[in-house]
Image 1: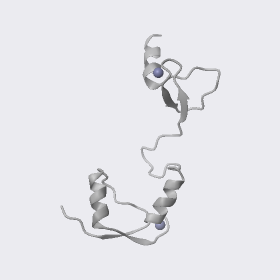
Image 2 (image 1 turned 135 degrees about the horizontal axis):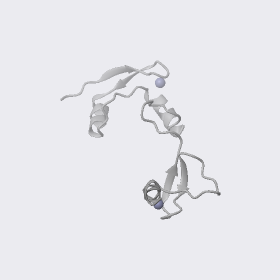
Image 3 (image 1 turned 60 degrees about the horizontal axis):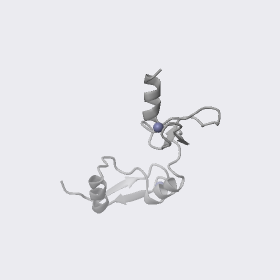
Length: 101
Ligand SMILES: [Zn+2]
Ligand SMILES: [Zn+2]
């Protein structure tokens, strides 16, 4: 498969930008199947927003909070804000503990 320069309209600002053959090849080598939707400057702006809220829709996980597993001490993430009053477990330990009950 050969690549050709493509003009794409940015979904954010509406500017037309070039998705060139080199970038397409790079995208494919990374396993990306989607074309970029945004021009480089909008992409840059998005990135600096630290991956913001649900930009790519579908499978974006909800906000996760960093926590330390009370069982194995591993760093983990939980979908709620950990408070001091309850132990927090990583997914492995959580499963084990539930099975033991
Ligand atoms: Zn743009
Ligand atoms: Zn654990």
